[in-house]
Structure formats: C-alpha cells, structure tokens
Length: 118
Image (cartoon, rainbow, N blue to C red; front, side, top):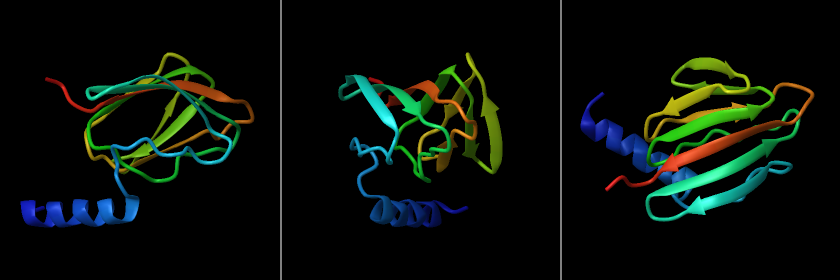
C-alpha cells in the first residue's frame, strides 16, 4: 500500500474514531483502573464481564496485553487469538483490533499503551 493511501486511511479512521491517544470511556460494563498515565505510557488494569468487548479501535503507539485471569479473545491483523492466564500479545502501533470476553466468567488483564519512548 502506498504511503499516501496509508495516510488517507489513517486520517479517515481518526475522523471516525476521534483522538486515539485520549482516554475514552470504556463500553458499558467494562471496568478500567488506570495505574499510570503520563506522556510516555498508560497502564490500565481492565475487567471485562462475560460477553463484553472493546469495540473495534486502534491506538497510536504499540500496546502490550497480559491476561491475569480468565480468557481474552483478540481479533487483529486478520487473526483470532485466544489468551489465557499469563498469555501476552503485542500490537504494533495503529493496529485496528477488538478484544472480547467470550466466556461466562469475568476476564481481567493488563493493558500497557506505549505512547512515546524517548
């Protein structure tokens, strides 16, 4: 894909999604506990009730997800990946993705968004 087309797609996504670096209100039922949020990183402990999902979104900056309890299903880069306790996933910056709890128990995980690494 050409750089111009990639840029046009990203600008279009920004117009639809809003400011991707700003903390947004999580979808209903999802609990987020922000432990650290500065110019470089955002560290959040997240709880998804059964059936909850993140909605399709992307972050400007890479993201690391580590499951502590339960099972989290990630849809990214044309793949479906199931993460159990101790499972981790790396998302490159600007990767459109969705996370979902497809079980009947809560899922708890850590989300580390790398905003800037100076």
